[in-house]
Length: 325
Ligand code: ASP
Image (cartoon, rainbow, N blue to C red; front, top):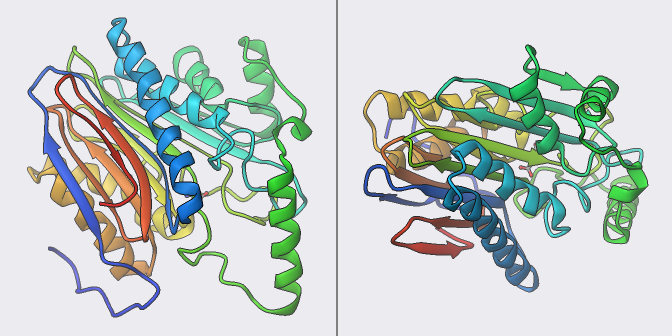
């Protein structure tokens, strides 16, 4: 393990990691549904959500779709699932609005599409995909992103369509508590339900996508790691595809997805790099979260230092899901 040893931090948990190797040229799909202390009564919904995402992404791969298609379809399913902090059902910002960020990236060409601070898109990853394939630009924010999406056939919605009563209540409770004490917004007990996917297709290409509603009670206009290239999402056939989740500010400071991909390019196993990345996150900036990592040889890693992280993966020979590693 490189870097300084992790300082003792009672709020962080031991890094849990998993890795594996797929037979080359077989497709692989790996998804996560956020890293935090998922309560027992929410475990089933998280597992169902990541398994549904795997099913949708795998359908795309089975029909001959690309890794890019697979990660898009997998993320759309989780954006549509109110269990997660993505799409409808996301956390509300300080003003009681949903504000979404997403990124998708293709490892063969390094083409990428990102949106930030959008308020009228049910599926920001669809808009991100349109940017990737139909724009000379890489990243759009706010009204400009929504205008681009609408012009390219992605339907807009009202912000109220993205808000659910559970989140109105969560924000109300949080703000009431914040008036009395100073809650630790970034403690692992606070939910980090961002979603992400990485995939390898039969052509040997990898891709990644990440989508989020960000953090609870965030300031309007705040962007986290999720939609920033190299922070919450990255894909390069020459290194690896990665999607992260967790407290976004520390992840951004370390450009963690690219940090991990570079270590895979240097010859390290994704399984070890995933664990090393989370160790680095904790040791260097006191962060917490999780990562999924996949290279173009089908080797992958899953790691987190939060009590739980919802994940699932599938290859032609194996399928598995869980909430810890
Ligand atoms: N990383 C996300 C953000 O900070 C939050 C999450 O992973 O749930 O916006």
